[in-house]
Length: 261
Image (cartoon, rainbow, N blue to C red):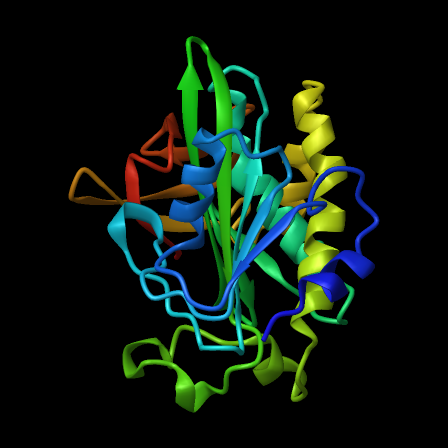
C-alpha cells in the first residue's frame, strides 16, 4: 500500500502534493482527477492508487500498472495561461521524472513527447489533458505512470522487449513514496517557470535529456510513415523536425508514433 503521509513527509513543495487523495483501486487516476478538478479541487491535488484498472496513454492506448509495485498518479494544475504554452506540460513532467531518477543514480533519457527511458527501454509514460475556459487553460491533469518494482517476468509478453522498471535497472527495490515526492519536488519549480512565461530554460533542459536530439527519427503522421531529423522543441511544445528540406512543427496529436532511426 502507498502511504500518503510518507509522501508528504518527503515533500519540500509549497503547493503541489499538499492534498493527496488515495484509492486502493481505481479505473484511472486521471479520470478521477479531472472530476475533482471540475468540482473545484485545489491546485496541486494528487490522486494516487495501488491498482489502476484502466490506465490511459496517448491516442487511446492503455498503460500497464503492476498492483502495489508501480506508481500511477495524477496531479491537478491550474496554469491559467493560454493553451499554447500548456503543450510544454508533459515535457515539464518528463524533466521532473528524469531528475528524480538521477537522484537514484540512474541515467534516464527522454523521448518526445511523453516517455522516459532507461537503457533505451520505456519505464514511464506521461499524459496531459486540459480544460479551457475562454482563451485560458483553466485546469490540466498530468497523469504519470512509472514501472517501479515489477520484474521483467511480470510485464505482459508484448512489453518485455521494450519496457523496463527501476528495480530491474538498479537490481533493488525502491521506495515508491520517496520517488513520488522527489518527482513532485522537482516539478514545482519548473511549473512556476512555465506560469511566469520563462520557457527557454524548460526547453533547454528537456533537450539536454532527449535521447534523439539532432538524430534521425521515423514517425507516423496521418497514417503515413515519414523520416527526418529531430531538431528540438518549439516554445509551445511542438516537435521541430527537418524533413526533405522542410522544417516541420508537429504536435503530439499529429504524430501517433516516433522512434529513433
